[in-house]
Length: 114
Image (cartoon, rainbow, N blue to C red):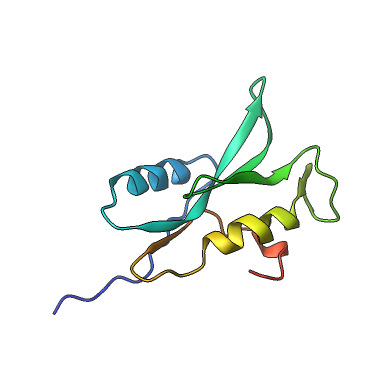
């Protein structure tokens, strides 16, 4: 009997293409999915923040240079409210669904709901 793969972790340096790979995998899955991915947002070729996009079409800032927060990674204020109201619910297990988590990093770990 073949073993069942339960978890797959894709790691790599920043800007190495992890999110691109995840988006391609999502587009080619024949199973229902839930979860989110994170997309870098730029203005005039300068990164201004990170946008979380759920697989059911919602989106909100994970972190942005204009967010005022007690939690920061470099120049980006982290929105704990958006993590907890958008990302966490998008990862609720649903029968027969694959869960996609694009980011498990410092910003997400500020949430107590992780």
